[in-house]
Image (tube, rainbow, N blue to C red; front, top):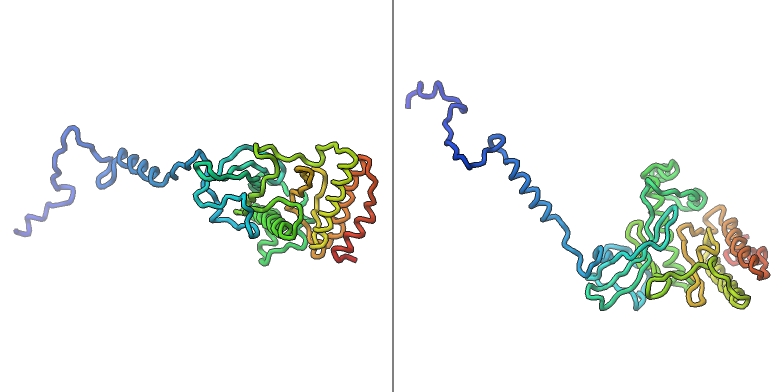
Length: 310
């Protein structure tokens, strides 16, 4: 071909094939049509959508991704990876956390168990109104994290929530291992704790000590059980930190200590002796108000000695 054949040629001068009336006209040359983009978006959504959980559950078991409780695991606990979790309702709401009733079992319902799911609230709603004193003696390794917690930034509050969950799970695991009356700690996944449900098979939770009006003989028995539980904690150098008749459950005549996120190492915490003494006086006052003669000061002194405090 000759050179002058190309002189008037430009890309826009290329002839295009005529379109038929029913043919889709792209919005812009070389790009997908709006209809095709929508179709591909639907395909992507379908491909990423999680499959339906079998057996009517709300989620698959998180056992494989969580930190587990002490061995040997109780025989009643369902640890199958094929198990599903089903939400059954709220057991308790609080300023720092909510406790939900959860059923974990195989989809065919051949094996299942009830669990209490304790979930700390998000940083926007969490109110750790008492945390400064309890966190003494618990310090992160990195100064940035310590500053964030001290300043109560969003990042710092999330770290505090993680510390509450870690501390409670560790304390429950430790106390369960030595035979203290606490729920079995099933697992920890982030700031969610799954614990043994203390109550009836139909999901009725055990009453709190504060809800009971025990007869004198039962009252005395519950007091001695409480003293025994405090002695076990003190022997491990621990105090509940917020003990009252509202965080002691009574099931089949036996007490169960709950709500231990603020558990205090009485040796490492400068106010450890103060927290231990306060626990004793708080619970002693409840029993004394119901007619039982107790020696709170003597008991507090004995427990401080038991914990190795001078």
